Every structure is written in structure tokens, then in C-alpha cells.
Image (tube, rainbow, N blue to C red; front, side, top):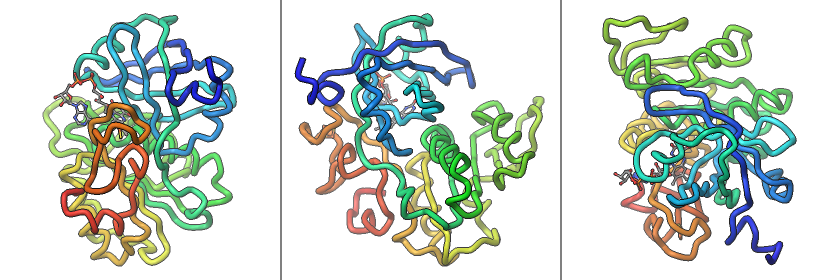
Amino acid sequence: MNRASSGIHTPFAATLIGSQALSADTALFRVAPEASALEALSRFVPGQFVQLSVPGAGEVPISPADLPGGDGTLELCVRRVGHVTGLLHTLPAGSELGLRGPFGTGFPIREMAGRPVLLLAGGLGIAPLRSLLFHLLRESRDFGEVTLMYGAREPKLMLFREELAALAARRRLRLYLTVDFAPQEPAGNFSCAVGLLPDLLKGFSFDAQGSYVAVCGPPALYRCLAGELEGAGVEAERIFLSLERRMRCGIGRCCHCAVGQKLCCTDGPVFRLSELKQIPEAL
Ligand SMILES: Cc1cc2nc3c(=O)[nH]c(=O)nc-3n(C[C@H](O)[C@H](O)[C@H](O)COP(=O)(O)OP(=O)(O)OC[C@H]3O[C@@H](n4cnc5c(N)ncnc54)[C@H](O)[C@@H]3O)c2cc1C
Ligand code: FES
């Protein structure tokens, strides 16, 4: 095999180490890639995605929820929604997988240096933002204060809640959680507001002129969050949103993921709000 094209056109081999259920339909998968993938994965920037292949089913784009160590192990937080993700959820540890990438743009971690960073996650949008959060915390001397606002539909759908609460308890980050509604059930060892994610921003006191903002969640939230952020004084140049489009090749060849004249897989998935404002159908 041509080494230059492996990992781009041809998947690296990878092994499923194990998985941990996070909710009824979402789990965190730990995946170990073959050694020849390590160089490519060492260039991973939070917000980028990999094309994960499940033999016998197909390939799906997934933004890693973290690359925790130097051994290239990936943590992928995957919701079971259809054919490929459905089969992935049935696989035992030791199963063979494939990986291409990392692809696309990530969050601008160099530009964020020295600045406070506000992360806004809705639902499964916490997955790519978790890898950014862990990067900011590991390299905390290089960044200003880190704040995470995370909204889920209801308490049992709030992913990584104990992990996030533990980080907040150790004062590693300012954490604000909210759920759309709270049915009569034990909410677990954490407390949160009841309301929509944009409501958390209303009246929130922060350094709007200096902060960088990273947003990932359901597209329906984006207009509203962008309006709140700009209203608070954050420039569109410093607001970064991760877009999700159906993908096929992942490398700019098939045009499946077009966002106006841009391609989500190569120009994105992370875009500046100022860029997206030029594309009427983007948000
Ligand atoms: C850059 C990027 C990063 C992503 N990161 C994650 C992640 O970290 N975790 C995660 O669980 N998912 C993530 N996704 C979504 C994931 O790729 C899809 O859920 C997956 O491709 C569905 O494949 P499937 O074969 O299981 O479902 P299918 O059988 O293909 O489809 C099942 C249903 O899901 C819908 N669907 C499929 N793909 C998408 C999509 N891209 N956007 C909207 N609806 C879709 C279909 O319309 C259909 O209704 C990401 C997508 C992109 C583009
Ligand atoms: S997925 Fe093929 S061009 Fe983006």
C-alpha cells in the first residue's frame, strides 16, 4: 500500500478496546489504532473528525471526544442512530475497525492562547467540545479561564455529567448545566438549571471583548446562540461553530457535504461565525 495515501484514502486498522454506556443510545468507545496511524493522529486538533469504518456496515464521520494519551488511543462518543452506528454498538471488545483522518478544521487553539474560552455545548455537541476542554485543561497555563455551558433535553441525557462536575469541584473550570425539562426522577450527583442553553447566556457576566467561543450542538440552536453572543459584545470573528453535514469521502472529492460554496469536510466542520454569515443556508 502507498504509505502516503493510507489514512487518507485507505483506512488504518484499529481495534475496539471497549465501550462504556453514557445514556440509553450513546456510548464512549475506546479505539486503538495501528502504530502507523500515530504520526497522523499526533496532528489531531480538537474539532477535527475521523472517518470510522465498521466492517460490513460502512464509514461514518465522528469527532473524537478525546485522544487521552501519547499512544494514539481515541475516545469516540457515538450515538446509535442508524446502520453503521447501530452495528458499532453491538461489537465486542477486540473487534476490528478502520480509521481515516484526522480531517477538516479544528478549533483555533493557537489563536485562543492567553484568552478566556467559553464552550457552549448542546446535546451530543459535548463530544467534540470535550476534546477541546481537555486540551485547554491539560495546557491550562497557556489559556485564560475556561467556562463550559452545557444543555441537554433532560438529566439522564446529560453526558459526562459526573466527570464534568468533578472538574468543576476541583475548580478546573466554571461549569453551568441546564436541561430543557426535569421529570420526576433522580437527577444524579449534580445540579443544573431548567431552561434552554441560550438562557444561560442571558445576564452572564464575562469578558466578551477578550473571549473566544466554541459552539457545538443542534443546528436549531446556532442562530439563537450567535445572536446572544454578538448581543453581549463577542465579535463574529471569535465565535467558532461546528457544522454537521452528511459526508461520504471526507476529503473534498464528492461534494456531498456542501455548505454554499464551502465543503464541510475540508473548509469545516469548524467555521467562524463571520464566515458563515456570508452563506445564507449555513445556519
Ligand atoms: C464532522 C462530523 C462529526 C460527527 N461527530 C459525531 C460524534 O462525535 N458522535 C456521533 O454520534 N455522531 C457524530 N456525527 C454524526 C454521525 O456521523 C452520524 O450519526 C452517522 O454518520 C450516522 O450513520 P448511520 O449509518 O448510523 O446512520 P444512517 O443509517 O446513515 O442514518 C440514520 C439517520 O441519521 C441521519 N443522519 C445520518 N448522518 C447524519 C448527519 N451527518 N447529520 C444529520 N443527520 C444524519 C439520517 O438522515 C437518518 O435519519 C458527526 C457527523 C459529522 C459530519
Ligand atoms: S464528504 Fe465528500 S466532499 Fe465533503
